[in-house]
Image (cartoon, rainbow, N blue to C red; front, side):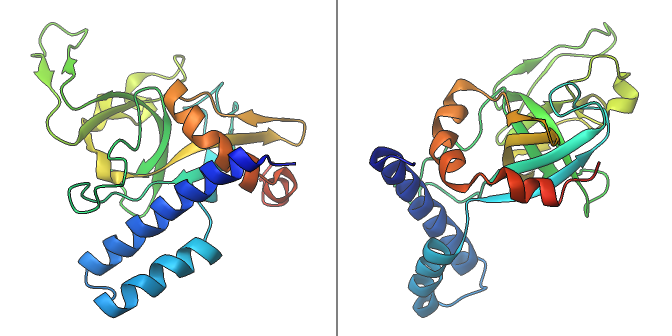
Length: 213
């Protein structure tokens, strides 16, 4: 049974998410000011904070399984925190496993670990490459599998920095097989923030239905 304290944390997070989505749609011209309130409450009462995503491939092994797995992903809407002051501007942290738009194939998504963010100095092992600092809203993502060659890992070592706004969610639970599943090892900050979402929205049986063996 979910505790009252967990429900309160979950409700606060859901209200923040609903407000963020509503504001984003309003500023994008998708809804009018009159529709803003209805959109926020509709998301709050009918929407979820997570979605399922199947990750294929060995790039994130062993974290997400040798050939991939079904993920429960927490949605991350990006909005200007100066416009909605009560929204936490920090959505992801270094160490998080994130789902992002593929920089090469815009219709696809990648699952990689966030290795660095704005302000980090990036130094290559190749002395021919000059060090550089990640700019505003830039991040660096890497595959977990150290046995995969950099050119085959399809991460920032091949396509460079990506925008934080290309991140659509954080993987919080992975079902590798029917008997091998559990929370994804993210940063401590994120695992604390995601714990009430996991307690309320995790449905392993539902994840298993859509799992591709």
